[in-house]
Amino acid sequence: MKKLVLMLAAASMAASVSAQTVAESKAFDNIYVGINGGVATKTTGHKWLSDLDPNAGIRIGRYFTPVFGLAIEGNAYFSNKPWTSTGTVVRATNASLLGTVNLSNLFGGYKGEPRTFEVSALYGLGWMHVFGHDYEQHANTKLDKLEDNRNRMTSKAALDFAFNFGSEKQFQFYVEPSINFAFLGKTHEKEFKGANVSANDYGYGYKTTAQAGQPAYNINNSFVQLNAGFIYKFANSNGTHNFTIVTPRDQAEIDALNAQINELRNRKPEVITKEVVKEVPSVKVKEFTVSDLVFVTFAQGKSALTNDAKAALNNVKEGVHVQVVGTASPEGSKELNDRLSQARADVVANYLKGRGVIVDEATGKGVQGVTSNRLAVVYVK
Image 1 (cartoon, helix red, strand yellow):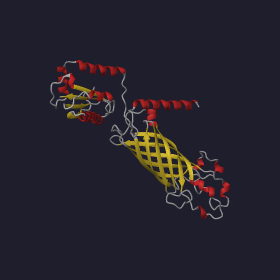
Image 2 (cartoon, helix red, strand yellow):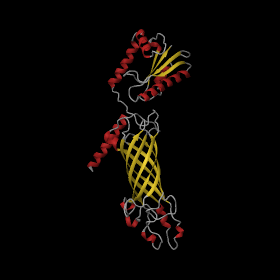
Image 3 (cartoon, helix red, strand yellow):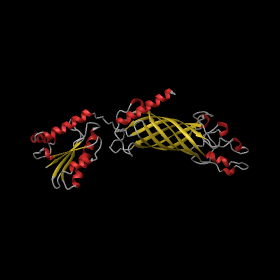
Image 4 (cartoon, one colour):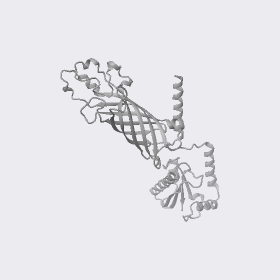
């Protein structure tokens, strides 16, 4: 018991650390879709690698952190082997809700992008429907309650051995061995008395309630499965396909940034003019004074205007000409920062245009030097 408590505490700590180090995600971020297929067979009662039952399915899921996620999976089973024929092309369907745990990130931490090779654990419950015989063909039998055996709860435990690839590791190929338990209904042996059918005929388990004490996890009511799958991770609201790391900002760094802004505001106009011309060499600008500059700050990885930002932009008079330059902080890839800085410049420009301000140019500069921050600077001409 003590070991179990310690393991749960470690998992909780890992989840907490993960939540603190990755950027906040929106409701429809970190969603993926995939297809899979493979073979299944009884765990006991026959030779392995014989009477294989092919299956195919689809999986849709979401990662809530780099460690934990949920997925919905549906599979169809096509062969009647090693069970008695149901007379249908699809013998059974199974839909499951699965919890996923990325063991690589749980024990090794998340490094800012998925590893090339990862291992994940899955566990969940499902509902299986077996397409049945025409029960009336069994004359002189009472199989009313056998209908219950056509539907049963299932449980799946699996390991995914995954390979991530693509320019942003947005694709994943995985191999998944699993064991699946079928919890039979309340059919008892006496209900098969005199029937031209056995208790084994209708399910992916093959012991009755009386024999196996169902519902329970019983190896005799299980089948093993080996599937391979392909997954695509949709793009998130920030343009990436995976979680991004947030670099923590301590109070000393925030104080230093505030001091830098205050110092810039208090400097002489001619010094500011020289620096502006140096940062934007390709644009002809007038001799700026500090009153000609409007600074707009953004949250990390975001391009939405805050109320404070809108209040600052409201000071720009209608009809004046401006130039907007957006920048980004050093975190993230160059491609992401270039796109993010342009988005910041565009959102400022669009807001000003809506107020009647004439925007001559809105340019995203990405990261300028090594200390560039999450800003958009408005140059009033």
